[in-house]
Length: 281
Image: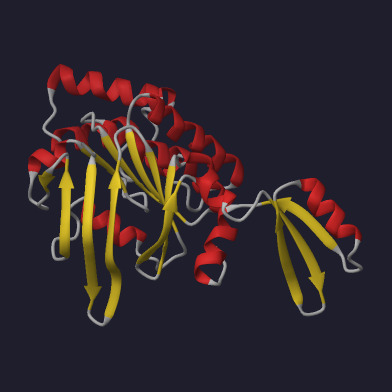
């Protein structure tokens, strides 16, 4: 049985159709990446699946059970990390966790044990008494994730988990997400970063303008185009040719008078194939 099943999901905001009848499943123990530019419908989809949007068309099921935004049993198995750090800045790390532990129905020894555990997992044990305002951007993201783990959810939603972080901190966050995955968590993440989706996702759904344009394992999606791209820089712009081997690309480049560059195929090439444009970050 799939962890999550989404069928013909639709959502409009006045005249804007944000999600246009998408269907997909989330398998137990995988990292599923929703990749697409801003405005693709990724965050709206996550907000529906986590009960933050209550009026929509279509059906969402958790382990075969139809989901309602008011279904507490379904919500117990999911943890949510929003795109923005909605932490209480007046409280320190420990106090933020304790407050939300109460909201999750935890108390006493059990709450203290869970706080210590998520502090250890997130690498924040040494900073438990530091106020949120004095945390780095990466630490704040780790705290938001730690908070979402307090009630031991089996499914974790990460909405743009590394947005606004510098490249070095972003990579440390990837290691953190992979560690959570190794602990048996099913992870659904949204991102507009090509490398992030490629690095983390077992499967990826590429979204654009409210639709899923393709889905599959990153390596298989890229293999549909080839393994290497020869970029030919002309007066009219960049032309691209795809090859199965670097050797083939090199041989082709020898016959070209314009400047060239050879690189590996990436998921942005796949996005371009299906949409005719690149992802703008």
